[in-house]
Image 1: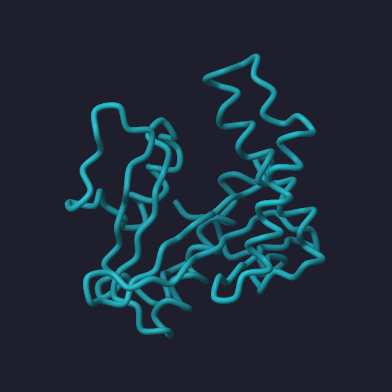
Image 2: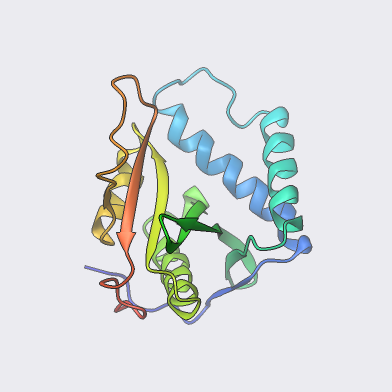
Length: 179
């Protein structure tokens, strides 16, 4: 069962002012994911905060790389970015990042960010979307599968792969998914 629409949740274009919150939630989400596999690794150490702050700073500065953030009661609780690309003569887009603060997992924020991306992709005329997901991230793989993403038949993973490439046919994906 999907959560009821959240009137307090707003998905909007991210600004430079959102950078600290986006970097913090990305670091927290990665730490929560990896802590289960590597309990002693410092995935939320200051160096990781700096790494993701710098990475998101570059993404926010890039032309042609839209960044969205989800805010609930004014606090940034999720972020997504995507890149436009040409794929085999067809307009395509890559979902580069989609992260939700672990304290808000399962509350519909990821779905709201995804729906906003879909609307933008349909508006821009994209026909296909792709993304890479960590092979061991079963939570994310299940999330994307539930939204219609499928393993890319043209990009089979190697036996030692760390990522799985997924694809979404935007001609069949609804522009406005049901809440």
